[in-house]
Length: 135
Image 1 (cartoon, rainbow, N blue to C red):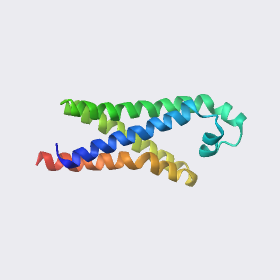
Image 2 (cartoon, one colour):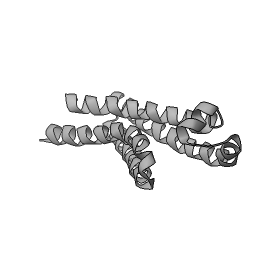
Image 3 (cartoon, rainbow, N blue to C red):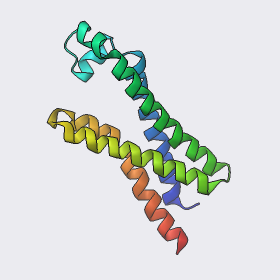
């Protein structure tokens, strides 16, 4: 495997870990004061009112994380076609969600950057690495 594909795999795992952390914030710790501040939730009652939505959204992030990490595990186990398909699909979905978040408003740009940077790097290195490997 080329160095570019190794970098892509490492970034995919890191992107997955970021999304596991987002899952934790949204699905486990949503009503805590620290998380409320991070997400701009003004009050405990607002956090309670949005708790089920955040809980659900957190699981979307967890499933994307599982896909990215499982994809890398499959690549390492020798099943490159299935593994890279999972990596690309999962990280492209993460990047798509980050683009949607960025389009929501200026106050979400930093969060979109955190959510989308590693998936973007993963996809770029996977594309470049697969192009040079195939040549």
